[in-house]
Length: 373
Ligand code: ATP
Ligand code: MG
Image (cartoon, rainbow, N blue to C red):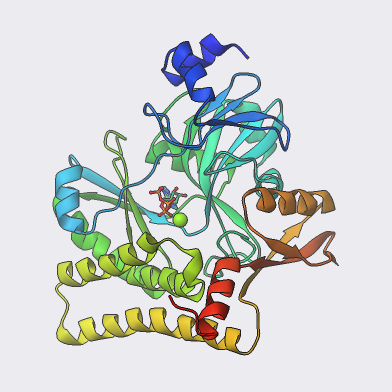
């Protein structure tokens, strides 16, 4: 690897790069191709940035900030026009071609064997034949998403929705319009585009969109500057905040405290900003309360009946090797699982996976036996 060139592409000195190699850059030798990964953000280089053996760089997908007061934040943040896209709820992948082979990177910069197989099935070869340096950034969603299973999207398995395009070795993305044109040209799915609004009227329009999305169980929106000058912002529906909480309370000891607090606080701000009636506010309080208490009670009762607290997901693969590799990938990410024997299905295999939720399991057992919190 030509260190000087890599450092230049990253926008840092070679000496600094060497320093980082001893601290936050980690090697990932499996699966092929080998790569170096930025485990944390540094010097403006996003976490999840990857350097491949041949010196090619794929920058991490930037964090998207979230306002709690929508109208005030839009006014402050955007210069004039706000483009609004659907925010989809699955996992972030960056798909690229390396030496003629498609690979899919997770947010953290690992090659995910399952996402890679899905990408190879869904992305037409012509995309990278024509644009070998492009990096397709998007969300994988569906009921057979083993990270975030969701059955609200029109697929029985898993799909890829494009929301941004980057170039290898370059920071930044091409922007909303080029992304949607590109998706159209190659017949790729893209996140829904709800239109462009002047910033004075955007908050009210977005409120209506988010309410409607919420009713459909969908997550929310990402607001983007069509000129790509200021970074995007995200905003989610109450339904999503509550269903996140429901999952987190079901596995309450496996989530960080901030996950719970931030979602509850969002509900407070949304209720105030949207100027709810007494009745609407009570309805919100009820669904917030239910999403906290009911899953928690479920978990405690199951443990009381001697059941293990687990989370079941499933994937569908063409090759058994993908399933074996994915099992290893989850293990190295610190997720403990049981993979059931593959069930042949439509030329491929259905794999049922049980994720063990060890911490919640142990904590609940101990508390039931009279242990202190
Ligand atoms: P962050 O991006 O702030 O690190 P996070 O990892 O917790 O947040 P989310 O809260 O889901 O993730 O929000 C950001 C993510 O939303 C993006 O990384 C991307 O995967 C996803 N996303 C879904 N739809 C879109 C879209 N239309 N445009 C951009 N990102 C989208
Ligand atoms: Mg998400």
